[in-house]
Length: 489
Image 1: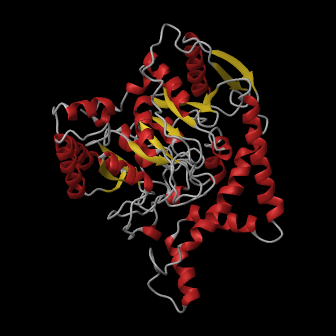
Image 2 (image 1 turned 90 degrees about the vertical axis):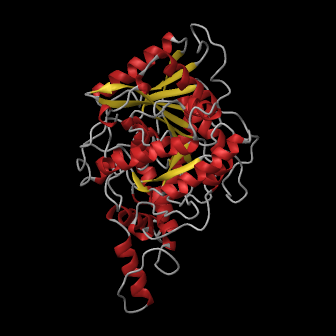
């Protein structure tokens, strides 16, 4: 069962080959066995999960089940879930039990899915390696001396080790796509505003976007169908007609299923900066796409080189504002000893936040301060517009843009922890997509030194269905996404 796709699991549940209680217990047993090695989950509540599974079985028995009814899903611990600890990987929220469900969680509840557990993450989603969590780092199932990527590394490690059939994540600068690449998964960041951010604890409000992590494009399409949709409680949610993101996956296709598709190859993605062994795999994937009928065209994204600098002005600025609410007054961590209200604020925040979060709060407060706003924040927003314009020009020449997801395979624990700039550069290929608000997907494209590498596809606004189909056609022609780490059989 642990190798079944979501569609296959749904069919098994429908045909009563297995019950949701049995399926959920299977994964709970695997979590109990393997999570101590990986630290992928922060919270598991077997009684709650099995209760939801029992309710799903009753629903299935009445013939009321849908595509996700009875299927257990892991959720990144940034999503509020009623009655569950929601920590954001931080000491600041280590005792916070959410009184309500995030819209994403509520949509999965409505679909009959089971909450399997809450997964570990970089503190407040700030990191690229899942090493900044207050609860310790997540380890990569392919090599437990290496990072799984971040900030959705717990979700990625859980799915890769088959401790969950699928999971949710969030992507602010690559935090779904990068761990997907490092753990041999498929992960999608939808167009900004397609998935509600209500109940998703904010890091950078103009960049954060929830998305699915699964083993294939088909699994991600199914998950996105239930995650997407307008939400009046989220002011950034887009009021658009509902669509089936998997509608192109089962279309009849011949020997050249992607004939007529134009793939853009940006010179900025195929120059210096990427490990040669990763670039070799990406180029092989491009050759496979040509075999599938796609045409490749050379394009340029001239402002790409400024994306990391712009991101690390805009994101910390928004973080400094969003995290101001965590002061020890109403909920979350409060320092045990203090002299007055101001001292309580200072000590609670100093003790409750980790080093990376403090660094970004300080940077964000600085760039928003009087005398520096125009020089830094306003300039970064102008660069953001240039980046969006570059993509708009590129999509007049091509349908999809391809390149590496990450410049390297998973690096070793602690390798970049003391050098924040090098850590930030690990998102160099993904950040521009968030700045422009575009959809992007990472899919497995091979192994280098026994470690997985990811291929990134970027589409124009609201072209998730096309991206998923382009990824799906590659996965029908290759078997990289079917590989799993042998240590977690």
